[in-house]
Image 1: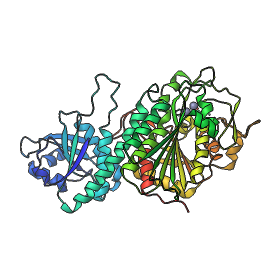
Image 2: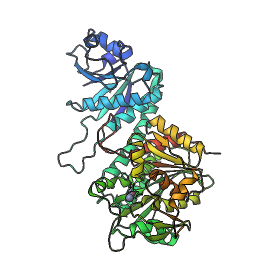
Image 3: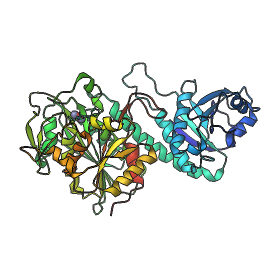
Image 4: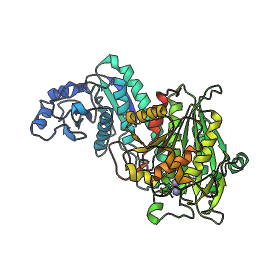
Length: 497
Ligand code: BES
Ligand code: ZN
Ligand code: ZN
């Protein structure tokens, strides 16, 4: 999907479809009023009939019978003006794309949503529109013999105020890069586990580096043995697919302390000997969505040429059961020197993250954010509407939460009181990898905290990483959650002091 910007009067535009909007309970204003006039009050008429009220994400398609050069007009409801925000603008754009995808057209022209009475500045409104339009047109169809991409290939933003065009172009550029990174994360997530193996993720990271200014280093199992990353190797030892440790760097500045992103890259989680049920196994190709989010974010921070030093660390591993598989009761010696008794092989994410968080220490990071589809308990706690957040640094947590609000990838804090640490005490090792049923999302984070030596935020994305039903701009399957949040965080990054 290509988004372009053009100066002009909306009623004079020749296009297959014009997208205009309406606040709930209001009469047409601005560009919508201009179209209403040109169409002999057609829009006012459908409002009077009660058929279009401008409720949030309501749509109505009108045909213009050559009264104006545009063939069709698509009305999109913005909801009540007092409730309007940048997320409403994204949803309006996504809703419009979905409505037009049912028609036999390839391009459309739109006004900005919320640029005027919505009180969004032009760059913000344009970013929202570009971001959500591209995300709404996303399809994953390479395994479907009849599947096609979205028929909609191009959207032109029309703006009559010349002084806003530069800001709109800037917003479109940002929104396009952010959506493209998110689509990369979705693609990586949606591939079957048989394709997206640790080696595949490493190859994708190398390709990413080749096509950008990022640098990429991949550590194989021999290298991990030399370093002493026994926890990652322990999880992978039951799999025929060897583990990989992937390092992507943006804007490397040796003297500076980076912002580090860590993503759980379990390319398939069978549970190991603590085998999952049939139902539990069904979605476990998505257990690398943390890794996917980090890859998408690294691609985007590079495309946006952000000034900060940013590192992405991805432990990529498969949790399977061959004759060598790790057994409940085994003890692993981690990179940090601390030992973990593995009492449930299905609690493997925290194991590969333990080595990765210890590895991050060598960067003396200003902050680390890890993303992981870590616990079913987090889904029980927060459902599918927020990721769980655990942190050792209130300032960093605040920045992450604000970034999540801004892009509508919401996160919600869970406490990390010392009492939770009691639940992961082991009889024979420094800790055990399960803490019982109570507060499962927190005890998982309590184990991670044992390997952290810097300001840190953990995001449990188990409930937000993939999606069963289509939303205005969120696809079914891999959502790409985390990419937009990490980019938003990096764009406004203030190192904790
Ligand atoms: N990848 C799963 C967590 C998960 C489950 C994510 C369902 C999304 C949906 C993780 O490795 C896991 O299996 N965790 C166990 C931990 C338990 C054994 C302490 C869980 O949540 O059941
Ligand atoms: Zn598991
Ligand atoms: Zn897992």
